[in-house]
Amino acid sequence: MDVQITDLIVPIFLSGVAVFFLSFVMWMVMPHHRSDWGALPDEDGTMSQLGDIKQGQYMFPHCKDSAQMKDPEWLKKSEDGPSGLVIIRARGPMNMGKYMGISFLFNVIVSAIVAYVATIALQKGDEGMDVLRLTGTVAFLAYSGALAWNAIWFHHSWGSTAKSMFDGLIYGVGTGVIFMLMWPAA
Image 1 (cartoon, rainbow, N blue to C red):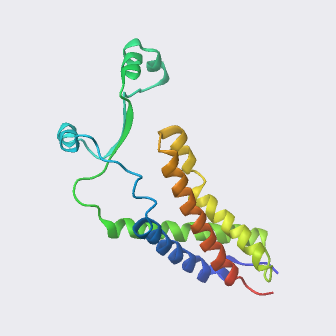
Image 2: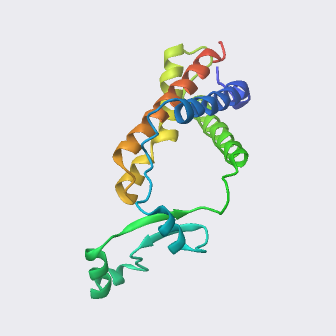
Protein backbone atom coordinates (compact mmCIF):
# COMPACT_ATOMS: atom_id res chain seq x y z
CA MET A 1 0.00 0.00 0.00
CA ASP A 2 1.17 3.49 -0.81
CA VAL A 3 2.16 5.86 1.97
CA GLN A 4 0.78 9.37 1.65
CA ILE A 5 2.64 12.43 2.91
CA THR A 6 -0.35 13.11 5.16
CA ASP A 7 0.36 9.78 6.89
CA LEU A 8 3.69 11.25 7.97
CA ILE A 9 2.69 14.65 9.39
CA VAL A 10 3.43 13.61 12.98
CA PRO A 11 6.90 12.13 12.29
CA ILE A 12 7.72 15.17 10.13
CA PHE A 13 6.96 17.51 13.01
CA LEU A 14 8.50 15.30 15.72
CA SER A 15 11.73 14.77 13.80
CA GLY A 16 11.95 18.55 13.29
CA VAL A 17 11.60 18.97 17.06
CA ALA A 18 14.11 16.18 17.76
CA VAL A 19 16.75 17.69 15.47
CA PHE A 20 16.15 21.11 17.05
CA PHE A 21 16.97 19.66 20.48
CA LEU A 22 19.81 17.49 19.17
CA SER A 23 21.31 20.61 17.61
CA PHE A 24 21.09 22.39 20.95
CA VAL A 25 22.93 19.51 22.62
CA MET A 26 25.60 19.35 19.90
CA TRP A 27 26.31 23.10 19.99
CA MET A 28 25.64 24.09 23.59
CA VAL A 29 26.43 20.99 25.67
CA MET A 30 29.00 18.94 23.78
CA PRO A 31 32.51 20.42 23.66
CA HIS A 32 33.47 19.54 20.09
CA HIS A 33 32.47 22.87 18.46
CA ARG A 34 34.21 25.14 20.98
CA SER A 35 37.36 25.33 18.87
CA ASP A 36 35.62 26.02 15.54
CA TRP A 37 36.06 29.81 15.66
CA GLY A 38 39.16 31.68 16.75
CA ALA A 39 39.66 35.25 17.89
CA LEU A 40 41.39 37.80 15.69
CA PRO A 41 44.89 38.74 16.89
CA ASP A 42 43.85 42.40 17.31
CA GLU A 43 40.08 42.16 17.57
CA ASP A 44 39.53 45.76 18.69
CA GLY A 45 41.83 47.15 15.98
CA THR A 46 40.23 45.02 13.26
CA MET A 47 36.73 46.01 14.34
CA SER A 48 37.79 49.65 14.32
CA GLN A 49 39.28 49.29 10.83
CA LEU A 50 36.11 47.66 9.50
CA GLY A 51 34.14 50.63 10.79
CA ASP A 52 30.67 50.88 9.35
CA ILE A 53 30.97 48.08 6.80
CA LYS A 54 27.49 46.80 6.04
CA GLN A 55 26.28 43.24 6.57
CA GLY A 56 27.40 40.88 3.82
CA GLN A 57 30.03 38.50 2.50
CA TYR A 58 33.37 39.86 1.39
CA MET A 59 36.47 38.46 -0.31
CA PHE A 60 39.92 39.99 -0.35
CA PRO A 61 41.58 40.64 -2.60
CA HIS A 62 38.30 40.95 -4.46
CA CYS A 63 38.10 39.68 -8.01
CA LYS A 64 35.12 40.93 -10.01
CA ASP A 65 35.62 38.47 -12.90
CA SER A 66 38.03 35.85 -14.24
CA ALA A 67 39.78 38.40 -16.46
CA GLN A 68 40.94 40.28 -13.37
CA MET A 69 42.76 37.13 -12.21
CA LYS A 70 45.33 37.86 -14.95
CA ASP A 71 45.85 41.48 -13.88
CA PRO A 72 49.41 41.86 -12.50
CA GLU A 73 48.21 44.17 -9.72
CA TRP A 74 45.59 41.65 -8.55
CA LEU A 75 48.10 38.79 -8.85
CA LYS A 76 50.60 40.69 -6.68
CA LYS A 77 47.97 41.39 -4.02
CA SER A 78 46.95 37.75 -4.09
CA GLU A 79 50.53 36.47 -3.83
CA ASP A 80 51.59 38.95 -1.13
CA GLY A 81 48.49 38.21 0.95
CA PRO A 82 46.79 37.92 3.17
CA SER A 83 43.68 36.74 1.38
CA GLY A 84 40.42 35.67 2.88
CA LEU A 85 36.70 35.64 3.21
CA VAL A 86 34.80 37.66 5.77
CA ILE A 87 31.17 37.45 6.86
CA ILE A 88 29.83 40.57 8.53
CA ARG A 89 26.52 40.26 10.35
CA ALA A 90 24.26 43.04 11.55
CA ARG A 91 25.28 45.15 14.52
CA GLY A 92 24.07 44.28 17.98
CA PRO A 93 23.51 40.97 19.69
CA MET A 94 22.21 38.06 17.64
CA ASN A 95 18.44 37.64 17.71
CA MET A 96 18.58 34.05 18.94
CA GLY A 97 14.79 33.63 18.87
CA LYS A 98 14.69 34.51 15.18
CA TYR A 99 17.54 32.15 14.30
CA MET A 100 16.12 29.31 16.39
CA GLY A 101 12.75 29.75 14.67
CA ILE A 102 14.32 29.69 11.20
CA SER A 103 16.40 26.67 12.22
CA PHE A 104 13.30 24.81 13.40
CA LEU A 105 11.50 25.66 10.15
CA PHE A 106 14.50 24.31 8.20
CA ASN A 107 14.38 21.08 10.24
CA VAL A 108 10.69 20.61 9.42
CA ILE A 109 11.35 21.28 5.72
CA VAL A 110 14.14 18.68 5.74
CA SER A 111 11.80 16.21 7.45
CA ALA A 112 9.08 16.92 4.87
CA ILE A 113 11.56 16.19 2.07
CA VAL A 114 12.62 13.01 3.86
CA ALA A 115 8.95 12.03 4.10
CA TYR A 116 8.41 12.78 0.41
CA VAL A 117 11.32 10.54 -0.62
CA ALA A 118 10.07 7.84 1.75
CA THR A 119 6.60 7.90 0.15
CA ILE A 120 8.22 7.18 -3.20
CA ALA A 121 10.55 4.40 -2.03
CA LEU A 122 8.68 2.67 0.81
CA GLN A 123 5.32 1.08 1.45
CA LYS A 124 3.10 0.86 4.52
CA GLY A 125 4.32 -1.92 6.78
CA ASP A 126 7.90 -1.95 5.46
CA GLU A 127 10.58 -3.21 7.82
CA GLY A 128 11.79 -0.73 10.42
CA MET A 129 15.43 -1.00 9.40
CA ASP A 130 14.51 -0.24 5.78
CA VAL A 131 12.67 2.87 6.95
CA LEU A 132 15.58 3.88 9.20
CA ARG A 133 18.18 3.36 6.48
CA LEU A 134 16.34 5.36 3.85
CA THR A 135 15.04 8.23 5.99
CA GLY A 136 18.24 8.50 8.03
CA THR A 137 20.38 8.61 4.89
CA VAL A 138 18.24 11.27 3.21
CA ALA A 139 18.25 13.37 6.40
CA PHE A 140 22.04 12.95 6.78
CA LEU A 141 22.53 14.13 3.19
CA ALA A 142 20.25 17.11 3.78
CA TYR A 143 22.06 18.18 6.95
CA SER A 144 25.62 17.35 5.84
CA GLY A 145 25.84 16.81 2.11
CA ALA A 146 26.88 20.27 0.99
CA LEU A 147 29.11 21.14 3.95
CA ALA A 148 32.22 19.83 2.18
CA TRP A 149 31.79 22.49 -0.52
CA ASN A 150 32.39 25.15 2.12
CA ALA A 151 35.68 23.51 3.06
CA ILE A 152 36.71 22.98 -0.56
CA TRP A 153 35.82 26.39 -1.96
CA PHE A 154 35.51 28.77 0.98
CA HIS A 155 38.29 27.43 3.20
CA HIS A 156 36.17 26.44 6.18
CA SER A 157 38.43 24.22 8.22
CA TRP A 158 38.14 20.51 7.46
CA GLY A 159 38.06 19.82 11.20
CA SER A 160 35.07 22.10 11.73
CA THR A 161 33.40 20.69 8.62
CA ALA A 162 33.91 17.10 9.80
CA LYS A 163 32.42 17.95 13.20
CA SER A 164 29.37 19.53 11.56
CA MET A 165 29.00 16.50 9.29
CA PHE A 166 29.14 14.28 12.37
CA ASP A 167 26.34 16.40 13.84
CA GLY A 168 24.42 15.82 10.59
CA LEU A 169 24.90 12.08 11.04
CA ILE A 170 23.35 12.33 14.52
CA TYR A 171 20.47 14.40 13.11
CA GLY A 172 19.99 11.82 10.34
CA VAL A 173 19.90 8.93 12.79
CA GLY A 174 17.46 10.82 15.03
CA THR A 175 15.20 11.56 12.07
CA GLY A 176 15.42 7.96 10.86
CA VAL A 177 14.57 6.53 14.26
CA ILE A 178 11.47 8.71 14.55
CA PHE A 179 10.27 7.72 11.08
CA MET A 180 11.02 4.07 11.84
CA LEU A 181 9.05 4.15 15.10
CA MET A 182 6.10 5.96 13.54
CA TRP A 183 6.02 4.27 10.14
CA PRO A 184 2.46 3.32 9.11
CA ALA A 185 1.54 -0.33 9.40
CA ALA A 186 0.19 -2.28 6.43
